[in-house]
Amino acid sequence: MASHHLNFTKAALFKAPPAPKGRKDYFYDEREQGLVMAVSSGGAKTFYLYKRIQGRPERVLLGRFPDISIENARKAAQKAKGEIASGKNPQQEKRAIRSEMTFGALFEEYMEKYSKVHKRSWEYDQREVTKFLSHWFKRKISVITKAEVERLHAKTGKENGLYQANRLLERIRSIFNKAIGWGWDGANPAMGIKKFKEQSRDRFLQPDELPRFFEALAKEPNEAARDFFMVSLLTGARKSNTLAMQWSDINFTTATWRIAQTKNGEPQSIHLPVQAMDILTARKLASVSPWVFPGRGARGHLADPKKAWSRILAEAGIDDLRIHDLRRTLGSYQAATGANGYIIGKSLGHRSQQSTAIYARLNLDPVRLSVNKATDAMFSYSRSEEAGDAID
Image (cartoon, rainbow, N blue to C red; front, side):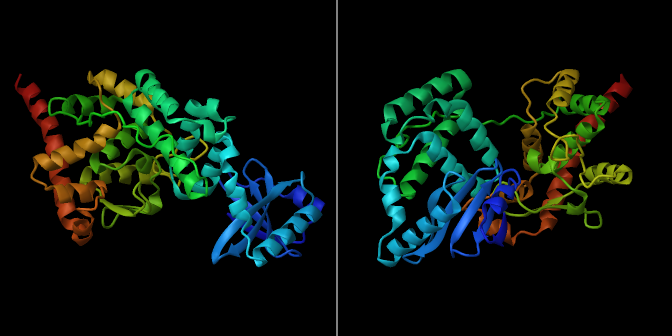
């Protein structure tokens, strides 16, 4: 988010470029204190008055530029300031008519004021709501009922799966909760609707599958994808973090990888076992990119390597295995080699109310020992298979 101070003129505001994707830029008028023009990544330009009202910072919407002129925006800002000085709150009046807001307008506000600001996964909100709820965008939020949310939940569960239906229900509930928090006096139509019972997934690479998996991995022609899968298995890190791994995050002296921000919002230090260090050392010697797994996409690093994953599973003759199951595989072999739940949680960056305090007291030494034992156990199955072939 960038801020600029200038004397508002038509020429200057027309020249203001769109903000970077997913962000907003703010231009502050030097003549009228508190008058701001926000510029979205799509190029939309909106006037606001930023002012403290009853001790809280508020953003009063004034109108879009150039639909509203600069002079009229200044007059609207002055009028709003006069109302505030007399004890009125322009925001309350605006909130009082939120029942007439369309779901599309509410969702846009939800994205700009909450999702993009507080959620690293905001793009999923944008994608999923647009995909499943676009038929609501022109409807008033006050007419969306609990009964139709229940029907939508059931329909989505039947056609797209229970998990997808439950995530959609959570998004609807969150959007309407925010509307209530911002002053809407209606009832949340998603409240009281029970989610479908989801079967927790416990799939991981079995001992008899590991030799076939390692053999198929060695044959994979996409070197970046091959090394990515192996590092994912050896570290138990989340897919998004591993894809975005950078050389600056790796300490080759201590064999650790620091993730500055994980899914739970906290940094994490991951021990790198010797097998992972061998892969990373070889890649570093040949690298000219800041990314460990560079790619051709807009972000600069490897995107989701689904095609390579399908080839590996087909070659290994393994069914029903997801990339995320590699993370569960490390934890499973840690448990098999005697690690307790706290050590496993520390290794995988889990967080819960019950165990957070204990995680904080753990250092990396027992985690390092546990990860080493687990990775050695996984590779031992491969060695056993090779020994059996030699005897045959």
